Amino acid sequence: MKCPFCHVDNDRVIDSRTCEEGGAIRRRRECFGCKRRYTTYERVERTTIKVVKKDGARVPFDRNRLKQGLEKACWKRPIGDSQIEQIVCDVENHVEANFESEVESRYLGELAMERLRTLDKIAYIRFASVYRQFEDVQDFVDELRPMLAENPRASE
Image (tube, rainbow, N blue to C red; front, side, top):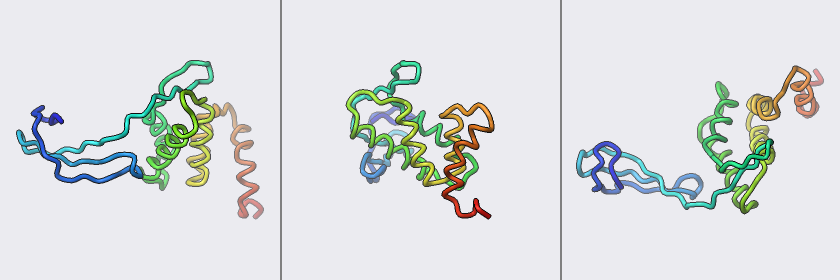
């Protein structure tokens, strides 16, 4: 492994531990050249699943893109990075377990929204408004109506 600072190919592993529910190994390394420390992650190389977009285009599944969308929806909400990462891992693992080569973007969005809804209703509505392309206030009302029916405070 080349040091990201001095590019010397000589280091030692200081610490190794599993992360992402066993889906990756995090390694702390120390470079013998510059003595700086850095972190690397080792993951299983997975088959590339294509996401079929609404317009029919096919693009490789990108966990970072999903994570960015979730982060925007969760902005200024009491949701930690680890909770967002857990949703991303859940969606990614579900897709890899149930699809061989392609998955529709609609399905990915629904999976993410399902998990967000149990975590934070505001983040869920934010995500849904972008994902489902809400065009006016009525779209928000239509999405909120079932949630309000579940909520006992709604009848007060």
